Each structure stands twice: as structure tokens, then as C-alpha cells.
Length: 159
Image (cartoon, rainbow, N blue to C red):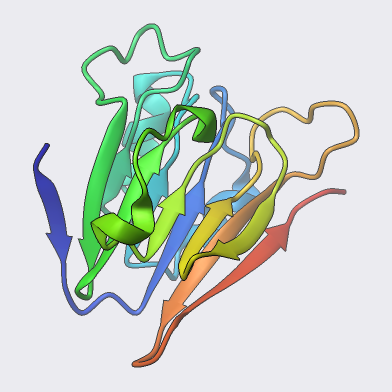
């Protein structure tokens, strides 16, 4: 697996589970980011193209991405020297991220936004920005960088 490297990134967006839907409010919220990481269940190629018109996109394939079979199931990204591992379903993570030197694990699948730290590794599920599922929020995460840490905040679009 190759590592995608990005330097001088001030902020990035973590998104997942679009399922073919990209709201104008989400597009507007993405306009100030330098990189978009999509943790799968994209829906279709045209949605990826719309995201790529905003910022560079790193995307992995989710369990419903049947027309996007060319996308990898997992991806390694180096952002400002910090390693990020991206996969759709966190239950498929089969190694110890702390031992491997990862700063962050990004996943989706559950549609439930969650940020937690374990053994020094930040785990982020940005939730879903696609069609609303049950009573779960519509959300994404934004990451900013400083010298000491990654700062992650959830943005809720639930109306």
C-alpha cells in the first residue's frame, strides 16, 4: 500500500456515507478545506467528481460502492507528517495502529459520529452526510493542525 503525502495542510474534512447525496450546505462547509478524506459508501463517481472540484480527495470503497470497485478498501495518508489510516468499517482494522505509528484512524459505516482516543491514537467516525438514517445526525468532521496535536470537531447539519 502506498502512502499519499500532503504537506502544508491547514485543515481537512473527514466525511463518510454520502450514499450519492451531497447537500449544498455540506458543499459550502467544505470550501475552506485543503483536503477531503472520504471513508466510503460514496454512492457514485459523479459525487466524487463534485468533491474533487472543491479540494483533493482521498477515498476508500465502502460496502455499497459497487460502481467504484477501483477504489481501495483502505488508504494510508500522511498529512503534515502525521499518518492517517482510512477504512470504511472499523471492525475490519486488523493491526495495532499505535504500534504502526498512526496518529489517526478514520472510518464510517455506522453513520454514528464519534471521536475518541485510544493508546494515543485518535479514532474518528465523522458520521454520515448522506440521506438521514433513523434519528442519527447528519455530520462531518473537520481537522486542524498545530504543532502539538490534531484538533477535530464535528459539524452537525441536522435540520
